[in-house]
Image 1 (tube, helix red, strand yellow):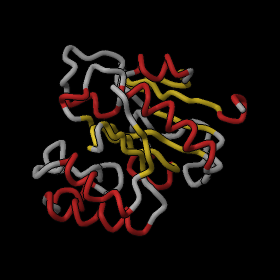
Image 2 (cartoon, helix red, strand yellow; image 1 turned 90 degrees about the vertical axis):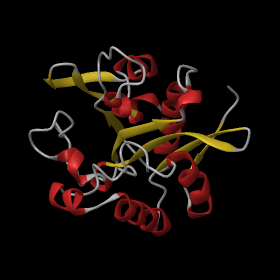
Image 3 (cartoon, helix red, strand yellow; image 1 turned 180 degrees about the horizontal axis):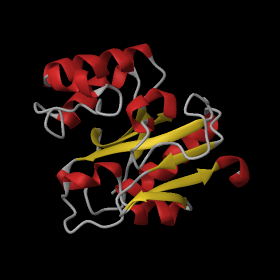
Amino acid sequence: MDTDILPLTPERWPAFEDLFGRQGACYGCWCVHFRLPPAARRVNDREANKAFIKRRIEDGPPPGLLAFADGRAVGWMQIGPRADVPEWNNKGRASSPLDVDPADAAAWAISCFFLRSSARGKGLTHRLVAAGLDFARQNGARLVEACPIRQSKDSRSIGLFVGSARVFEQAGFETVAERKAGRPLMRYALAAAS
């Protein structure tokens, strides 16, 4: 699959909206799960989530990357400073920080993926992660963390929204903790890779 991977800026909103569809991907989440506290998520519907992420995109900086094939968005990866996804940092979560300050603007996270079903199984998440590391480096990140799933019985599993550990291992991420079985906290140190 020949793809272009670009930051999600306001002019790319229509492509993002098309990718997420009427349902808003993952049951109307619109990729706000790690951005909103549980109380807000409970009262929000898919339209409120959509409005929230649209405002976030308009406010900038880009909250992630879109992959395009033949001019149409086929994949999304949420990446940015840990502080931009506060729920990802909560104590008790497998993704909570180990030895970094979540307010540190140089500590980044890859927290979500969404791919069109027709784009799955073609190496797109590998390309998104590689582009994400470049994007993070260009924007002053010192490290990028992820908390993927180690094993899934089905490539369509909803649990894969966090990515596959295999993809991150192949990109050079190392496991720094595993607080929940099958959900390693993985890190790529950009300073060491430069």
